[in-house]
Length: 82
Image (cartoon, rainbow, N blue to C red; front, top):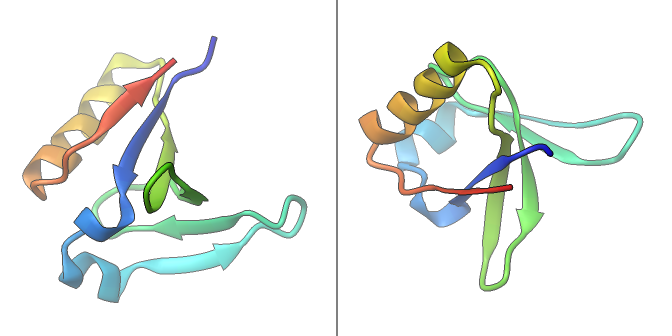
């Protein structure tokens, strides 16, 4: 089973949003966003109350800790769902 980490779009610090790279996936039409300091893209999705950004939660523990550390460094709360 795959897990995903979710953050609230509104919780991303403004400076990160200003430097973020946004693209649309040509195959799926998904709205993707990539932030400075983290190498993987997240997908912008409709959440229950507001926009969220969904990241694949890495199976590799080093990559998983890197994502966790990146969220914590920027003060971004996140939820992991399997």
